[in-house]
Length: 278
View 1 (spheres, rainbow, N blue to C red):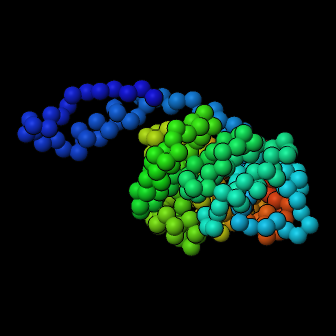
View 2 (tube, rainbow, N blue to C red):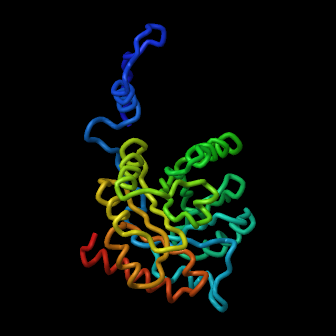
């Protein structure tokens, strides 16, 4: 990121600046040079499908983590919102690390972070439409304060836009889910252009989302990878949302219906992308 310093406002000068000047100051300090976005080349740029494993939920009877790693997914993300502990996280990391599969932790809070060489990295949520600043940067500050310095080479953030008011993540983060398609597109633009976020994550956990809102986010982005999660229950829903999102995230389906159902979603999103719908 290029950063410019300009001397526009002197606090003791008595000069009152209107909002256009503050916007100008904000742009020169936080935005990349005009027309420039820093290279966004994380491995997720190649992912069609991510399988999110909740350490607090069991697999379907008779299925193993070897089965999970053979679903065809591009990466496994270990994380959940409620009742997550370090011990539960570690058990899943250990189980999945035996297989050749990109493995990431999505920590819900600093207390459950697992430090392991078996992990390819950490994908840390920041909720852009949270009412509380704690879920935008406060929790992250605490993590750095308590455990810093972090393994920055393996740590990236996910700019969440949470849109299902009934989801646990919406309740916990006090997310303002009442967003129009234009609002979602604006959040996506802010996340990419102002904050340099490589992953924009539209989260509808527990229900299938509004494709118009996801399409609006996709149209607003130029370099960032658009993740979508929520209500993907089979081939058709994965194909439909895969027409707009770069990466489909599937979670509850694994625990509710099993690995064969997950494999169907892998086929759906990959076919959508192959058919040129995105």
